[in-house]
Image 1 (cartoon, rainbow, N blue to C red):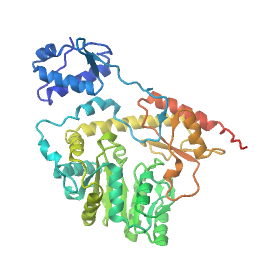
Image 2 (image 1 turned 60 degrees about the vertical axis):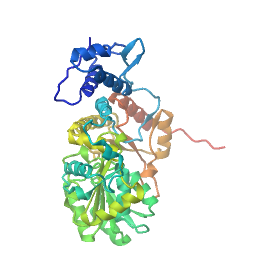
Image 3 (image 1 turned 90 degrees about the vertical axis):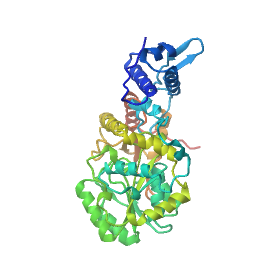
Image 4 (image 1 turned 180 degrees about the vertical axis):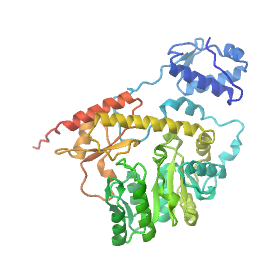
Length: 448
């Protein structure tokens, strides 16, 4: 009879049962179709109540680990395979925590000793103090040290970006961005009627001289920038370039929005916000580092603009859900988040190695820890034609136009996200397909 090992010091027993069940299924010790012990028998063998085992089996069923029928018992279900769909969407840029799915799903029940009633009330505008404190601790892992009073809990990093734009950018006034920039920055600026001024980039990111010139020529007083694992190019600034950019920011007295969403993958880098003196907003979140479903982000601000950020928060969502925030920050507090980040760092680098193997012509400037690649295309390929060709082979890529800081000529390149496939094997097959498409000529377009 299957029997989990229970440790009274390792949390609720029902969760330990589910975690042990998930571990044994992944390790092959339990196989699809294996029958689990009747609830009363398992309760007796591990010394708990039948209700505890019932709760464990119910949670395991919700996670898709087991199924059952009245009169037949509870059986192990097959795990979902890597090829559940024929189409693979490589436009989404988030690595799901496949090695930790059962663990995270099991955390969707709040701790029974938590004062849960308070989570049902409207939160303070910036979030509950314990959530902001945990956010400050999370941000401190990136060497940005702020007080909890400077942190807002948001509905994901995109919401944090929108709050940052509403806080220190002015509708109708220009804002500086990389010439290729995150599509979410473009969308947020468009929503708030903020015209964008593209700043040229090179192999090391935004060029400091170009930033100075663009600021003086346009009169822009705000810059939105991604120094770490730039999206879409995958470049991370060197320490020397960061110092140059900081000097321009100080000399031109620019307010800064720093998007550090992927910074957790490059812990050796230092965010600009760690050394800024003026007005700034620093954006991060848990959708990329943990799992997208948590929809919890953190916005750190310089003290002078925190109140404006709170006002923008109230105008958008009043306050982020404290229930979602509690689920997310509990993973930070007990170390689960750090374990998942460590796994993602290792997995992302392994996937980049696959990309370089299948696509050896990738620019060397793409960081080894980047979760995406900026794939150059040779003539006669155009980005839109390549996207169409990939879709015809079952691979979805996003439009290159969405990354332009200003509408204009579309570069011969496409962003390919390495994160979506459940397994490296499926990613490898997709990259091989993209390499085949890239090496061939596009099909001619006939007109009548």
